[in-house]
Structures are given as structure tokens and as C-alpha cells.
Amino acid sequence: SEMCIRDRPVRPYSKRELAEAYAPNISPVSALNRLAQWFRYNLQLSEALLQTGYKKRQQIFTSMQVELIFRYLGRP
Image (cartoon, helix red, strand yellow):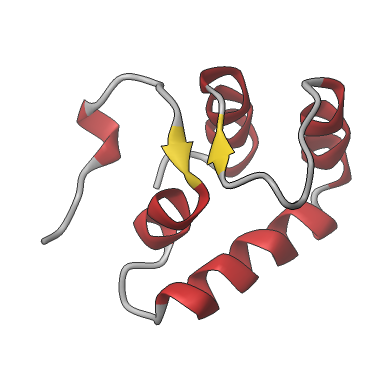
């Protein structure tokens, strides 16, 4: 089912849920890898996420982290 986050409030999302929203046409694992790659390439986003206490292994993004991701990457 095609999810449209645009109509939804900023809220906590699982990493997989958010990755799939940005890349609905590839496998969940590929989508997660792509999201991780975007974080690596976007140094401002990476730095902003680290300041919120973000850890690579964390499975759920907080609302604040989701807000930053939307700001730097655009909404999915």
C-alpha cells in the first residue's frame, strides 16, 4: 500500500518505515542502505542528527529526528 507521509504529522517512524517511504520500489534492505548512504553524504543532516543523540543502531527515529530528515531530504 502506497503510504503518503506528506499528509501525516511529523511523528516517530521506524527506520524501515521511513526508508520504504523514500524508496517504495526497492527492497526494504536496499531502501535502508540508501537512507544510510544519504545520511553519510549529507554532513549537515548527519551532524544535526548526532546533536539529537541519534545512534546508527537505533531503530526508531524521534519526532525531532524525523523533522530534521524532512528538512534536509524533503518529504518522501
